[in-house]
Image (tube, rainbow, N blue to C red; front, side, top):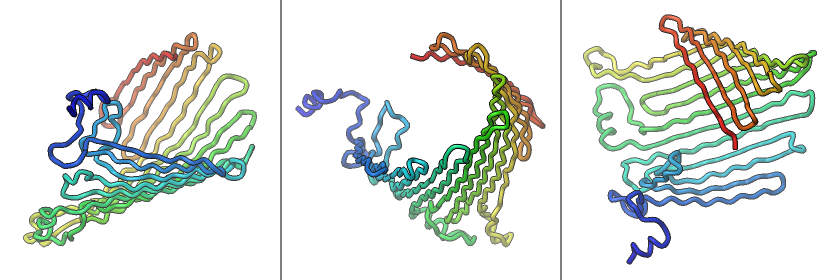
Length: 330
């Protein structure tokens, strides 16, 4: 029989999902094919994949199911590896078993350039990414929007594009002490073309200086982080005719600044490391985080990490978090 034949190849049990009762074909089956080429300082990889709506992998629960698509990426090494360029493009869609009324399509693009000009010169990194998602609108929702008394237009249920920009630089120098200065700037702009107008803008700036003393086993860090966030949403009213209003576009801002002062002292041939830091935050929320920790390695295989955080919150109760972690390396 077919069952006896299948048992010679795989283990048949209640956790096997070869078919899906609500659909046709083999929605419980997944497949993937890849091609990798490494020529002329190019590392090119192409992947095509299909994972059915009923596919389950108990060893890889993180895998996205009900998806079908492909991805192409290329890593290029230039000028004796002093410039590294990466490009990737991915296109995928769900509704592989045609069990949904609408399908969602995704188109993603990523690109970055990292430049390392040499010793005593700063390194740079530039990055750009665009992530898009589109989906239709089921007929019931389309009819409901068309009959509304307000001015909401009939759009797709999902039609958005997010653009991300990254600029980062690192520079190592000495003034009797070895320092590493770093700065990064990232910007994300999400444009929502549906009637909800859920646009988002996020700006993130971070800079820090890490110092390693040559006369003592001490490392210090001073850093500043600034985050600026803006969120839009279109709010609709059911009493639009009575109050002569249909919708309002509201905006919410969430901005904050965080300063970090910390240090780490190495002892016992670097087997024991004591660390402490102070991190006040201002803006949308106000708090001060005091952190203390000890990291001890015994006989190379055993590692103990003790960490304590005391968070002083403005206008509400304080928090205390203590953790002890043991690691065994083999």
